[in-house]
Image (cartoon, rainbow, N blue to C red; front, side, top):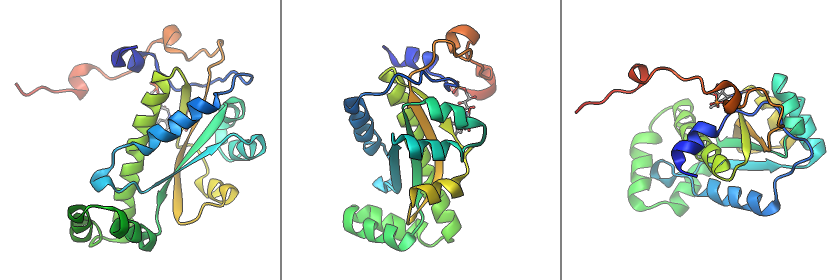
Amino acid sequence: MDFRSIAEKRYTTQKYNVSRKISNSDIEDLKHILKLSPSSINSQPWLFTFVSNEQIKNELANASYSNAPKIKNASHLVVFSVMDNLEEFEKRVEENLLENSIKFYKQYIKTQSKEKTVNWLSHQVYITLGFFLAACASMEIDSTPMEGIDVGKYQNILNIKDHKVLFSVAIGYRDDNDITQPNLIGKSRLADDTVIQSID
Ligand SMILES: Cc1cc2nc3c(=O)[nH]c(=O)nc-3n(C[C@H](O)[C@H](O)[C@H](O)COP(=O)(O)O)c2cc1C
């Protein structure tokens, strides 16, 4: 499928088919694809937690407000976190990045407040969200990106250290009766001339 069709067909799934699970090989592909996401100076300040364990997935669902039913019926929940232990992050930078990237980090990023640095790092994790949603759609896997979650509870349930949970994505296969499918209700987007300009 060409990318234009993928973009037109993907949607935030509201109802999953509880009996259809994603294959292990597709999950391995998604992990690999996430790792290949781009990031400024190749900083990769992320942690991706794939949850298929039903008990843990249900606990996370119960910490996800109105998103709970989607997560319970989805095949997997993927939790996206940003590294916020800057000492640890800087060790990684020193050990893995190219000299110019280390220089950029020290000169322009490290000199800011911790809040601004973690904010910059979080931007990198959000890039992976777009990458991931597109990858899922290209594999005909349905998805639900969610910021409507209790990140503090997620952090505790998953015992995540040195990172801050930002958002999660439920993945699986749609229930045929999901009334929010684009072939039933279309896509709701602002007009081209509101959001796109061309300087020719
Ligand atoms: C960062 C982010 C957070 C979102 N959080 C939620 C959420 O908590 N629950 C939900 O049902 N949809 C959530 N959405 C989905 C958006 O509402 C949805 O992408 C938007 O309305 C466009 O619809 P579409 O994805 O079906 O094209 C989120 C989307 C993004 C990108």
